[in-house]
Length: 125
Image (cartoon, rainbow, N blue to C red; front, side, top):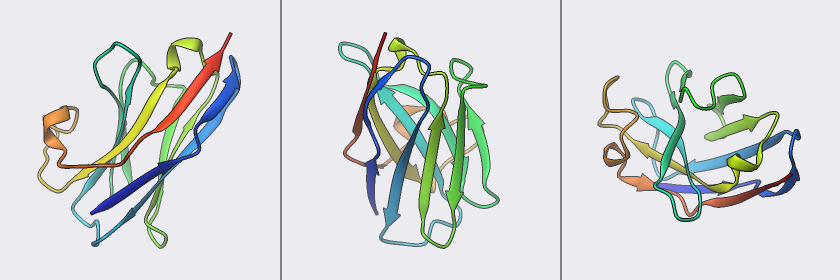
């Protein structure tokens, strides 16, 4: 499994941004694909996840209402759209995947065996 995140950059507070994660190497039926982020000096934080089939997203409470996760089945791409960005959203954003998951484990870092390289998002105030 290969995951490649892209779309990061420098934005201003209040802006919107869409990150993409290109997934390859296998079919992802039965997988969950997730977004995580890590700010400098902090632990990696769960942002949200999408159950690949049927395309059902689940979001962290900390970002709920400001993020939307979608996926393109044909292109095997997962997108994370963030609105009303805040300086505290500054982090490196990672996509991750695994097929061994449950509702109770999908928000755990240890659930994910496959990780992309990360894309940096900087939100200026």
